[in-house]
Image 1 (tube, helix red, strand yellow):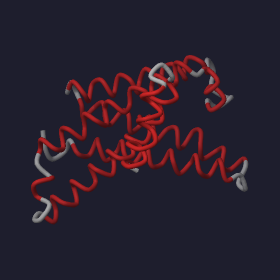
Image 2: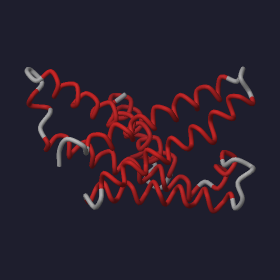
Image 3: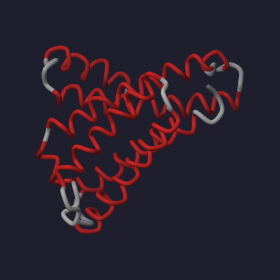
Length: 176
């Protein structure tokens, strides 16, 4: 996944710095990478050598900052692409407000994690929001179209994003 970002997404981003889709691609994949990275640090801490040098608090802080930075373009996409309102459940009133609010929520969580202001709370709120997307958006869409591979794919991707956010939130339990 890291090679994908470095070899495919970053060159596309560098050639289209004004295109939010390029930032979003880097942000989404980086969020997944950091979630796995944080899980790897947790596992390595349990195992200790030979991975102890990769599990210090400094490396964990770096990964958390990268996670926070990844959330910012994800939040911006909610603000830049009003067509994403199609994913907001029709039964919710003020759907555009929800779309904007969740975008601002992603950005606020990312900034809070980067600048280390209530980072654990920000990570928990981000994880809760991502989990609510799974439950309120993706699960009902899969039930409505159980044979649609796209809906299943989006569900599993949303679950992976939620997992990355929960891994980040949990990482604040043990260290600074």
